[in-house]
Image 1 (cartoon, rainbow, N blue to C red):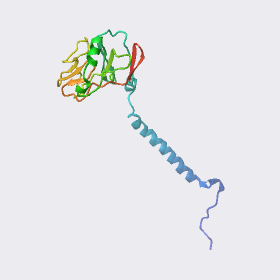
Image 2: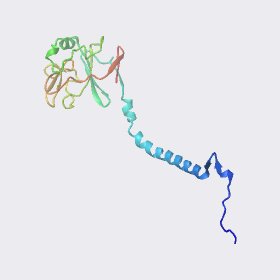
Image 3: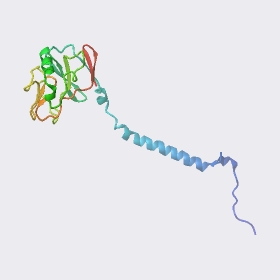
Image 4: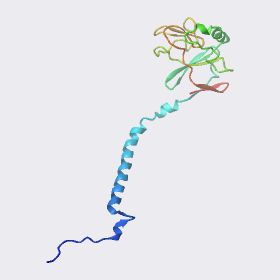
Length: 189
């Protein structure tokens, strides 16, 4: 009788460092799949990053030189109105003369402005009650009972330092992070 069983022959070239060609194909397929999955997932992760227009507004430089004493202007920072008030000596004195203990959100005028630049008041122009924009900007005309700003939505009155004096607003108008780059330029943000 003849043995009809096929014999496998050992081919030493099919092994490399203890592995087979099949092992190589498995590793190559897994690597290709991982790269493909990463390529498919990356756009989903990347879309969660801030838009370039938002990043561009992360800080805003403002030239203060054209703003005359007594004038109030509004600039935009991160999509929010920012009030810049070039205060007169009378407005500064009025803000300093307030009894801080009587305020709903006690804060001195000196805490709301930069030392050496007391004439410049910089605040986010959004009422802290429900997010309306208070009146008092533009022409420099003060609104409300305290010479500052008045929110027409629910009647909050702010003084010449942007502090809440009367009405439902729980706190003063917020002061954004800002710094003076020189005597006539500020960077908000």
